[in-house]
Image (cartoon, rainbow, N blue to C red; front, side, top):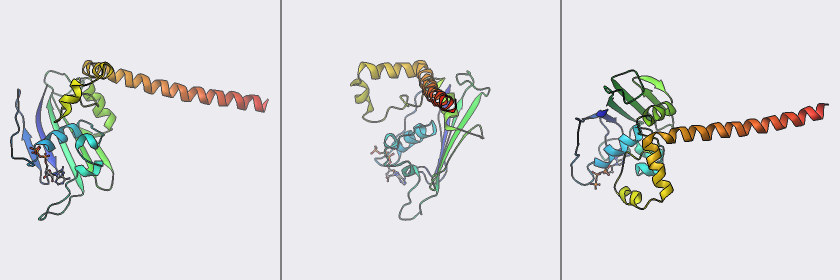
Length: 199
Ligand code: ATP
């Protein structure tokens, strides 16, 4: 599995549609300060489901939408698509190439798609987490984050390893199921109270 192309339109400094192609192996992005290198990395994290505006170096999620320049007005939406080569079947989906897309509208709405079909954010996160690329985005290590990894507590380190091993997804599902069970237990107690009252 490797990343093939990344297309940005209206994302941060990339107002016009811009496609970057990647070959297998190491890719280096070079350019002057402020030219948008980190914005490319932000776009990768964003399309893979990043939910924290701070992780994307912004104050709120809307900050990822092109905010305009002296010669160009702001845009109403940010779109990013990532095409992944899945010839080795690392992603649990029956396609040798998978394109995931994310769009955010300035009005607040979001759209997600897998190979052009609308889906939920959860579907993208689930698809990627089976390959070790999870929602915590430990595969995208930004400037300064290496230090945080080195200083992580044993519990946090365990979290990184669990995510890479695909355990985290099942832990989250278990937590969700336990929350539902808890709520259900509350309903049952309420039902028992009502039954007693009626009798
Ligand atoms: P450095 O080498 O200094 O780390 P860089 O190449 O990584 O720089 P980025 O941080 O990716 O640069 O890009 C910063 C540029 O992106 C700034 O000029 C900033 O104004 C621009 N930018 C960020 N968000 C937006 C936005 N929403 N709309 C328009 N431009 C934006």
